[in-house]
Amino acid sequence: MTDRTPGVRTIEVADEVYDLLKRTADSRGTDINGALRYLMEVPTPRAATDDDED
Image (cartoon, rainbow, N blue to C red; front, top):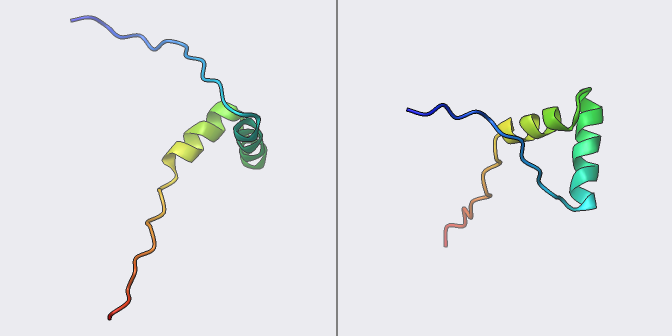
């Protein structure tokens, strides 16, 4: 069995994404990695259902 050690990965994102991560980090008092962890933990909102009873 081989041990898997975490590696460093670099992901390029658009400036708008970086700005969003920076604002999220600033508002949460953390760095961009903390903002990423926060955004990944936030539950995804459910899509609105069409409740029309035709």
